[in-house]
Amino acid sequence: MNPIKLVAIALIVAGALGLLYGGFSYTKESHDLKIGPVELSVKEKQDVNIPVWAGIAAIVAGGLLLVFGGRKG
Image (cartoon, rainbow, N blue to C red):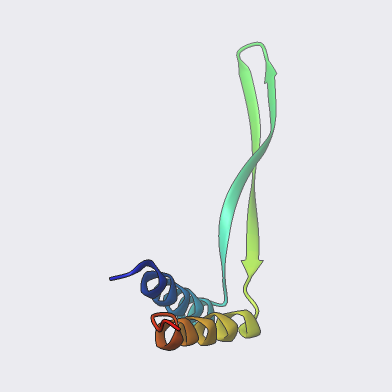
């Protein structure tokens, strides 16, 4: 399988997952404080929303790459 088809499939899968889940969240650790033996850190939960148009655009781009990406000349 050539690299263009792999990218096309990855775009389609990523777009579909973006539409299904609508976003993702991750935990970010910050504000480290060390005073002697005491350590303090704060964990913040960050949310990233994926717009619907971005998911649809990824699926369309992947489909176009899959159809037209392998053609030469």
